[in-house]
Length: 379
Ligand SMILES: *Cc1c(COP(=O)(O)O)cnc(C)c1O
Image 1 (spheres, protein in one colour):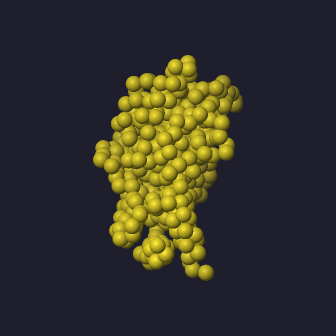
Image 2 (cartoon, protein in one colour):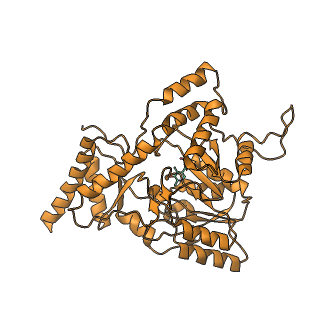
Image 3 (cartoon, rainbow, N blue to C red):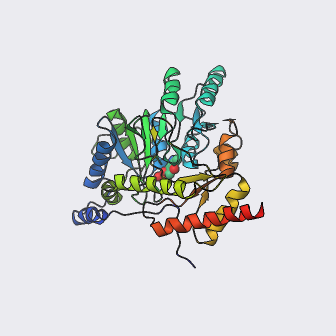
C-alpha cells in the first residue's frame, strides 16, 4: 500500500510542546491559565487591534454561545448559509430555533445576497424577522462581505460570521473573523491551525468577550459559594490545548502561504486538462485556500477522480453537501437557486495540508491526470 496522503492533517511548528511543558511545570492543567490568555492575545494581535477574543472548546461551542449572546430563543428564526458544514447550523437547533437556509452565488460559493434579502423580506412579512444571519467563508473564500453586511445593517439584524475555515483570509485587506457582530473561529484537527480541538469568539465589543467567558465557565455569580442566575456552559478552552495554539500562531502565516501554494500548484499542473475549474479570488478577497477544490465537468468525472485517488491511497472529499439536502434539515425552509447543489455534484476537495511534499502533490496530480487521459481516450 502506498503511503497515505491526507486531505488536511495537523502540522506542528515545533514550539507547541514548550508551551505545554510550561503548563505542566506550573500545574496549570485547567480550562484557564496563562496559555489561554496568551493565545487570546496572539489572536487579537493577528486579527486586529480592535477585537477581543475568547478562546473556547470548539467552533461549534462558539456559534452556540454567539446565538445565546444575541438572545436567540425557542421558535426564533435564524438565517444560515446552506452550503457549509453542519456545525454552522446545528447550534440553531440547540436553541430550539429554526434555521432558514440560503443558497450560494457563483463568485465566492457563499451566501447569495439577493436570496438573503428575499428571505428577510418574506420573514418580516410573516411577522418573523430573523434574529441573526450566519454567513460562512467556505474553504477560506471570503463571502461578499460588503453586500451581506449592508443588507444585515439595513434590516438591523446581527451577523455571526462563521470564519472557522478562514483564519488568515482577507477582505479589502482586513482579516476574516473581524466583520461580524460576533465572529467565530475553529482550531479543530483539520483546520488551518489546530489546538487538537478548540474555537473562539471574536468581537469588537469587549463586553461580548466578557459575557462569553462568563457563560463558558458555568455562569458563576460573584459570590464565595456557587451561585447562578443564568444557565451556564462548560465551553472554555483548556490551558493545555491553548499551549498548542500559541505554538501554532508562530507558523500561521507560513501555513497560509503553503496552502495558497498548493492551490497555485494544482491550478498550474491541471491547466492543460479540459473541464476543470478553479475558484479564483474575486476582487477585494484573498482566500487562505484552506482546502484546494476543483470543479469537474460532471458528477461522473468527480466520482471517477475520487475513486482513482482512493485507489492510490489519497484522501479526497466531495464539496460540502448543502444543509437543505440533509435529512436532518429536510423540513426547514430554504431559498435555493441550484448553485450549491451543482457545486456538491461536481466539486472535489483534494489534499491541501501545509505539510504536503512536492512528491505528494505530484502523486495527486498524476492520479487525476490518469482519469482525464482515460476519458479522452474513450471519447
Ligand atoms: C469546523 C467548522 C465549524 C465547527 O468548528 P469545530 O471547532 O469543529 O466545532 C463550524 N463551521 C464551519 C464552516 C467549519 O468548517
